[in-house]
Length: 578
Image (cartoon, rainbow, N blue to C red; front, side, top):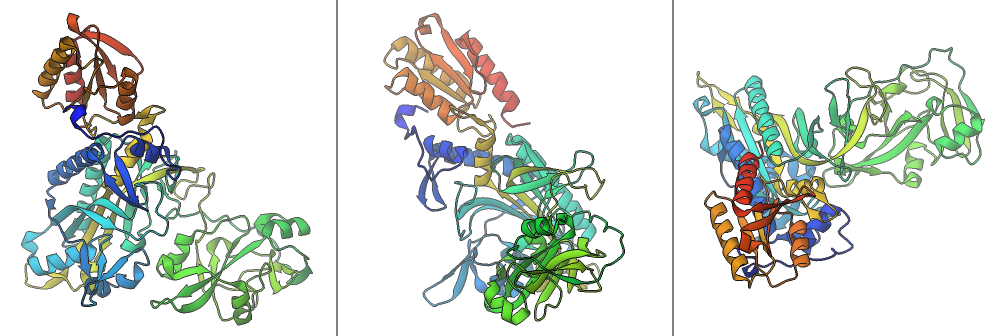
């Protein structure tokens, strides 16, 4: 392909709103173009990379017997209402109406649709197990689209769905997809970690996230080097520190003027934060988004609240809760902002972190301006409506599996798989008939890969100060031939010969024959990240070229035949990313 006949508009700088370097590089390399907040056009080079990632995904999904189909992105509200997710999914669900005022949504995922298809297409156990997948545009009405393709409103996703007869067969399908995902991300050239994850709005009993390791990732991960424990921070269970054994003291109200924070009150009283109780107040909402009830959460003063654990404990969608206005909550419950404690509260649900069970002689707000209680004992002075782990597993804390200190890192979620169980087959009344003709609900799993997010994750991990460094398996072209003087007949003839020889071996070649300065061509080649650069210049008459890999700093002078042979060997070795 001649670059002079292509559209390529590289930039020296990206707009200031592109915060991440990977986002900047994709814009500067003319891979993507922003059309609106969280909405992008994929330009020719960028779209070629998307297709390469899709090819890897298709190969590995077909390899395990998954069948590709294509479902509509515009889905009727009735299906989502039947499953209960029309309200539960939250404001990210893009709701629309047709001219007859019938409700639809733009699908962020397709559990309802695929379940309805199977309900009407499949009836016998003889057709099981079954695995369908698609690669389709998905939509989420993000409140704050940012970071380019990392958090966009329209994105390309591969979603797959398995249907099995029982839990054991679901476990087998899940394991098969798990291994398929490992192969996919290895072939894409990603350094990734698989961690246990929260099921979120998808639901189900178990989930794993495939996270490309990155300091720019929105996923905070916790792992143990001494065992196989690895999870998102939202999912990670904590080991409760055993309470200090001491004689309970009497409950005592103490004057603590102007000490609204844990730090202030502990310094004023001369006590450790571990002996204090932190209060956080919330209000929850019903399906019509009307205020439902107040919730007071209490954790040890040196701990941080895990919001995902809290909403799971309350069994509500994440968007059905927010911090309460303490001025509104006070008259109804007895709290006092900055001096709230669990003793004497009323008309609210009390959630207590499991680590506070059995504690004695703690300090907490007295629900009175400028006063705290000391000598507070769980069970005697207050009790929980819900007693459970709602804290963050912090770096250095004991591993819940082996007890050794855990570590934190960050990652970009590129895939997630879920054991759905019978959640959707039950709600949508989807059955198969077994050998005896009895009706049974399906056991389901779902499996997603963010195709476009994977593209940016690759750039995040594979770049330098000059531009992108594509792995050969996903590069838009394998080789770029840079002509120093396109008008020179010797250079042109040698370029044509090398291009022809490479193309005979199904190697994708881009020829930079533009009438530009050599420096411009080299800078563009580095920016767009083509893995192999063959430069044809003043040695063309001798049949020699400069040969350079994008990922290396060294350049070699080779004969045309040697360059062709080297390129063929490397591409043959790395084309499939395995």
